[in-house]
Image (cartoon, rainbow, N blue to C red; front, side):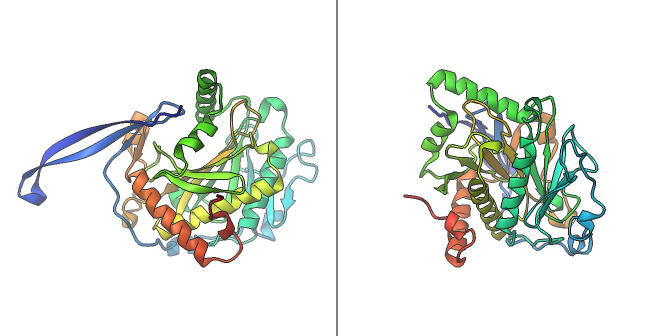
Length: 352
């Protein structure tokens, strides 16, 4: 049984904005039902208008991941890993990271446009990029296949190249966050003789954080986000890991991600990270992607949304109530679905 545990505390002070009247503000401590880690829900960020891509980003675009440069100046793998040095699918290209983060550190340039504006990400290209990552991980030795696929989009996410692109890492060691989640999955399975993800979908379905299901994927806002703005989780109904996902499933996931990106952009948050795993077969696990919005707290100052609270406590700090944010996100997804024809709009409607 999934437990959504939280504790509310109050901070009290004399408010100079209200003639020094006593004021109390609630802070909620939420416990992640899978890992047991805590997140704070506090300091609510006010709603903001749709964010424009800064002119500085537009001016900084260098087409190194777009044709023809992507085929001329990006590095290549040796023939023992990739016969032709790079892998291509549609308009997307996979190659090694010139500044690797691990033993295997591939990059996939998504599509052929140097900069794609928020809300206009091409689902077909994103789907091809995910398929390239799957095909790359299939080539790795079994003791190196448990890694993580990620995506940084726009500067707030720590992206140094505006051209949309995926990155991944794989090595002898499972990254800590996935390892922690694997342990949580195993503990839940032992206690309940069932998979955590089935229990989570059942517990969240049709609740305040629920965003719907379609094409074998379930969407929900995370109960205890570790980021400053609420994260959205997209979890497969039955696919256990990346290498087990077919082309149709990965293109359906891509459609989910670009629809979510468009909805967040409409709410004023254009930048994001995505973390996708597992990349190898783990009993009781499920292929899933966490969409993590990023923002400058004070855009004019380019002030980061990560602070000493995140790095000092290694706990989550979310500055927006997940349930309220989910209400707004659900409305935005519905409006986008009604406005768009074809493309990813069909992935927004619930299966009933």
